[in-house]
Length: 402
Image 1 (spheres, rainbow, N blue to C red):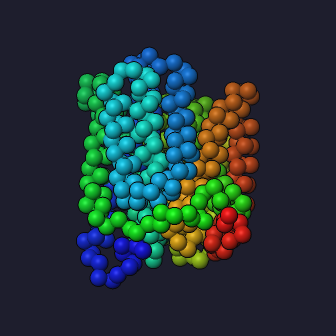
Image 2: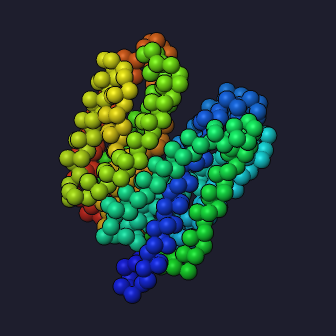
């Protein structure tokens, strides 16, 4: 049973320790990803990394999130959720520190994979922990989680280059500082080891592999995947779209920074708004409508104004994370849906930036990429309408039991 629901006599200090632990862990989950992008040219030159190595480095997050995330529930049943999150933060810290100390491309890639594996475990575990410890406050805690995740994402992207410059152009220092944040995040979870929830170490009917026949699980997974694909496309190609439209590189970079920063207020608003409805389909429709207006405007007349609409549409990310808990009755099923939905979703998402690049290179324009985006939005709407309806994974016993 949950350490917070099994007894009303549990101290408020434990509640706040859990909140602090979730916030600090969330701040770390994307630092291994977004600290690399701003220094990619320096890393490639300093490590002698080939184009194949650079491509692998940018693909590693999707691979790690998909593969390691899939086995996270099984690992949690063996070692416990609190212990496993502590292990995840340890992997993050060790991976980030190691890659900051080396000048070897293979070791850098290997240590990046270790750090990203820690992030992948956290991706799956935190929605599960929210469901287990705060079953009556899923919306509030998802707001806390996604806002901290957005802050950590932007912080690593925005601060890495200034840190590198302050360190005299040493990228090792700029990447290494993020390992210290992982150490700080581990401290609450060391204290929470004494409050490890009771776990079922036996066979469970909620394994991610059993969800392949569930229409609801696939709807959540594809919804998660399409919103992630749109995000990856925008982060990878927005600057290029704007420079092709006449913006300078500095102007395009500023717009991209503001676009990224929009995720913070959106992460504050969407989960609270979505929990006001038992049925999240109106929110799904509203977010897709913002996307449509934004992308139509960008296609017709590219401008920073339209990126604001797209930024609001990206509220589909916190909504997708909320669905992992809202569409399940128990923490064990949340864990299974989180692993299945994020693993399948990230595999779907990973193809987006590559396909956009191929289409743009083949045609020299953006018509086909925008056509692809509108197709993806149509799929997002259809799957979101199914996943957003007030229903539960456990109500599909024939689909998820062996």
